[in-house]
Image (tube, rainbow, N blue to C red; front, side, top):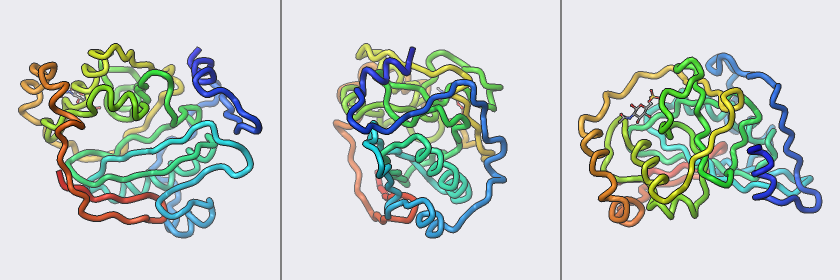
Length: 251
Ligand code: NGS
């Protein structure tokens, strides 16, 4: 199964951290909004998080080294809820991780993983992590959905020239990314719906972008020219905050 595949991709070393998988464990989180919130500095101190939101287990060799990248804008409350929740979640998985918050265009932080077995590390193939969301009654709405939370290696990301830069506003950029993966023969994987459960935080929906269908129709022509290869950005500001590394970018 998928965990055997992960074990093959990441062979155990001496004193490797254990990753305990218990498929029968049910969702632990019902209402993330009601979880207690702690002051960021107090939380960082209590959980041993280094400035910039970095942590790794000290008593074993972590199997996974992960950058958690959150595109973010204007959702302070949700960011707080997410940070309170995700650090203990990632630490329970014994990951060597660092959280980056990239603030720029209109995107959401709205998905909270509910099952501690949904490991925040890469599988051999790009993984759609949020395939079972409460707002879709924990069903996958269409087989090509690759939006929300995804896990892939830097190499895979570079192979498809990253994300397209022509999508602004809500919708379509994830569908475009999925077709890029397919064009390079990168088959997407998903864990079972019990493990891939997510809770969507309540938020105001952005209006869908009107250009998205047109952009999708001619997406294949742009794979090689539109993406990392032509991305222009400036880093306007950056800080190591207690629970994450913050980067303000202008695109
Ligand atoms: C599709 C969008 C995707 C989006 C998905 C789920 O219709 O970008 O819905 O959205 N594609 C287009 O608009 C072309 S959700 O309801 O989870 O916000 O990810």
